[in-house]
Image (tube, rainbow, N blue to C red; front, side):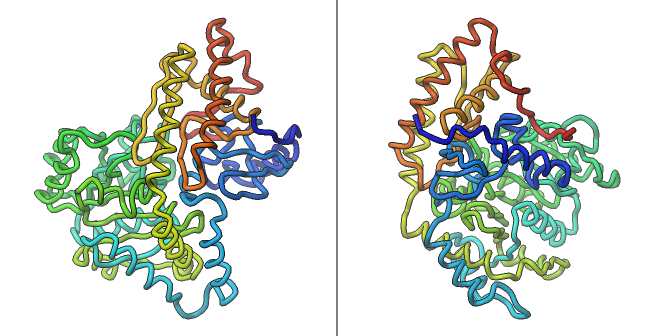
Length: 445
């Protein structure tokens, strides 16, 4: 068991209670709300992070076997090579009336990695990069309808899918996304289809093909494409004259050097990157074919903060460090061992948990059963006691080792045993110190 401070976490929890009073929603990112993991227990804030180790405001030390900055820190926290490049850029000035030269070098590197692309534009976050990509697609096609598969952010163009009633986006990672504040006039501009279900996209194309500006999807998340799914999507985009946009924000660089579409063998017209591209520093990229990217000159797409030098410097340094380390086989080995460990331990304790993984994104589903969410919360609660940030998802990084994994799985073994015993007596919820974790989006009270 990892040793860590036995402090109660009072300072961390008190600050979060104050943060909820001052910040609507408590945090800037839904996926960083403590209520999504273990209410009143999950540490909202950190004072330091290095490798896979974080220290909260009370001095408690945790090993991160959750999402490593929601997938942003593929090289591990505080990568020296990236940090040093950023520090040098800051010392020389991070912004001015002129542009940072690193953005040209970053564009060159990204298009070299993706031979189908010729140009790049940069933002500082994934959500806004997706908005840029869709704006470009709508500009060059002079159309408005977008077909989406998966989760693609908070913008109006995406949430418009839920304007027609129900929860059209419910099966696309985050359920319950209310389109509050999205103009009703956008009804009928965004339609959803599910991964590996080409007939659903075909139906959208049949009804809206003449108005279809873009098909937006992740090439892969947890499950691999089947039966030529990506090829069928590419063919439909070509047939109906739509721009194919691959959202690589989460999966990009996780299993290969570049977008996951490179190893899957289907090129888009636009690919969007963020998260791992800057190893935690804010940088987003939209790369694409020159004829399509010309839409970025026709449309008004511009922001002061997109010109600062830290993001492009971090992006370039991250790519150079990835190229030097070539960490993908080691990261894959870690992911495979964790997923096999989950399967073996669930079976040994008689727990019907299921495991999914792809692109080095690992997911543990604590079902079936009405108590699945309570079990997920209990798992996180007990893993915190063992010194781990852990939940239903695991994003391995270059700083995770197989030795780390074996110690982690030892803790999982003990917690699974406790869960099995509690489940046998119908005592899952009674073992929770506070309420169950939230699922999807909900308003904080």
